[in-house]
Image (cartoon, rainbow, N blue to C red; front, side):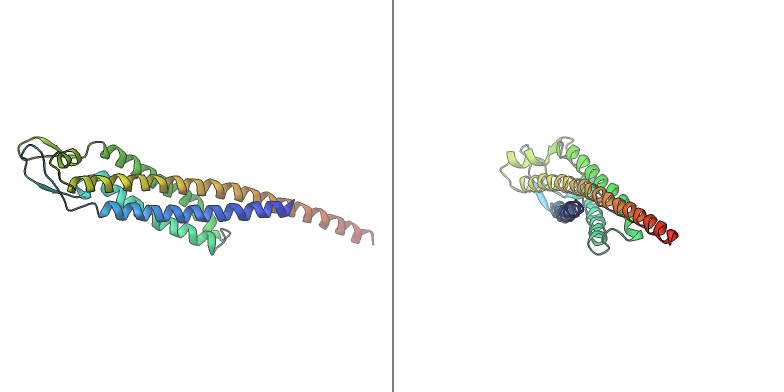
Length: 205
């Protein structure tokens, strides 16, 4: 029975580590893809002057770059604590629950803000009309805006995938931790019982 619990705990730890590594990679990819979504010239169909659009023109996208970068860094710390410290170090026991909350919170909040901004990517032109970054470029036959929009959309979905991956890894870690915790509890109880028996035998002698 104990062997089965150990196998389950090792399996859960392996899956948790894989999920964290995947989440870190996806977060980095989302940050890089969003940060490079820049220097795209949008040509409006109704004669507005061309404008160079970057991700920094949209605060939610700037937040996504910052949040995913920080989340990737924190997830790297979590991986170090799990792999090299085995999660049993005092520092690991304090930091792991905090990281388990902070990383998904950063990723989900950034993804939600970016999703809201994606629905209305536009700017106000010199003549007072709003120019859609995606539709304006497409109407004029340009590819700058469409490339920008594609990168932004992919980055947002990568951020969402990173959030889900990290969340799954945290849930699996909790399941594996409870299994190993139950195993250690049973060992401690059995050792205490054997200790009492030995003490009684020595007392009789």
